[in-house]
Amino acid sequence: MVSIKKQRVRVFDINGEVTSSRISSGKPGHDTPQGVFSILEKNVYHVSNIYSGASMPYQERITWSGIAFHAGDVPGYRASHGCIRLPYSFARKLYGLTKIGNRVVVSYDDPEPIAFDSPKLFQPLPLEDATAMKSDPTRPQLIAVNDRTDDNSTTDALQGVPRLIGVSPALLRAVAEMPKDPQRRPTTRTEADQIMQEKLDGARSAVKTAEAALTATDEKSKSTAKDFADASEKFEAARRSIEPLRNAVKSAEARQKDAIAAFEAYMSGPSDNAKGDAAQASAQSDDSEMDREAELEGAVLDLTIEADKARAEAAANEIRFAEVQAAYSAAQNARDDAMGAFRDAQSDLASAQATLTDANKAMRLRSKPVSVLVSLRAQRILRPAGCRATARSADRGVPAQA
Image (cartoon, rainbow, N blue to C red; front, side, top):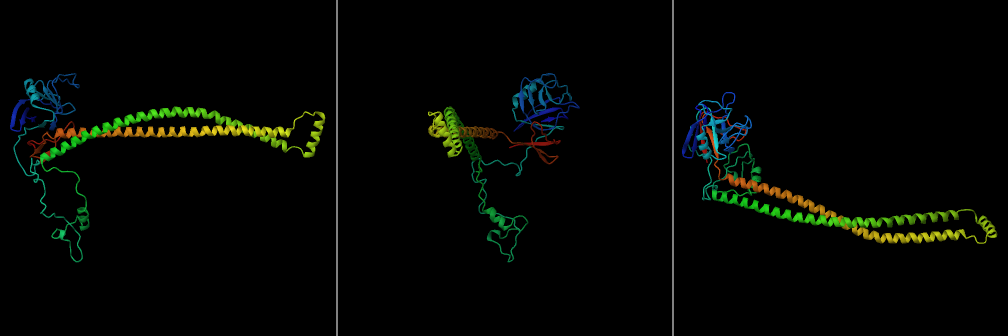
């Protein structure tokens, strides 16, 4: 407890005052903030990053903005830039008495802690008595209702219940039919410790399961990636082999089409008499001239056979290419599914690790005291402040620990 008015610090434990010392707090314009703080950081050899590397031995930080206890010059009046200076020997002594998380109360006057008790204070769970926190099942539960029937009849459950605006019988029945809270609620400290340990064990098991799943999905993704690479290579090879056959079919069909067009053009030429006269004249001039119609018809037949052969060869390879293409698509889908499962496993592991971190933190905090400051002047419970938020201090406060 730090008193700005008296320029003193007093240290208490559960049994009362342990030690005290003179201090030097912030001078006007650099006032030491008042409120309830926690020790956030401790460092035997600390230098200021604000005031040109000034030495701050046995530093114990209470705000992240730079306010701390540390050894320094204590002239008997307010002289610092906001920190709480201590005599060197006392700073070393205080450093050995405190730990991270201890409460620090800074006020203008000198707070005087007093012992008190009240049924409204936080009550710890009993150590072993499992019935202490259970409600009496024989006591009727009073529910406020506001519905009234014409004949003033009510159910047995509503007899004698005060009729206040708030809950109707229909809502009462709906609430009664709701499922109970599925979460276990401890009734003793032993059970609370057991539940916390179960949560911690469950979180550790979940991390191990997530790590195993990540390893399995990693192996699966690597295997499917290799399979996809092999399928891709086969697909490219099949595609390269099928392209010439497709081009051969196109070329053969084009030649067949040209031969058919030439034959049709010849057949749709001059009339039969004219062709007979031309043939007779040609036979008389050159007996070795080929029959043009037979030649064109033979060309059509030959090119048709050639096109059919090219189509048959291409069709056989198309079947094999379709099988390779289907295997390629299946390998691609398997790889994508495996990569998705791997990413999900990474997310699950991160979530399980975060849960384990929270469980470990909760387990550590179970051994920490719960501290509050009760201001008699303000009639308020002041919450402890961390790095930035501070509570308005009263002239006289009562610290309590549960």
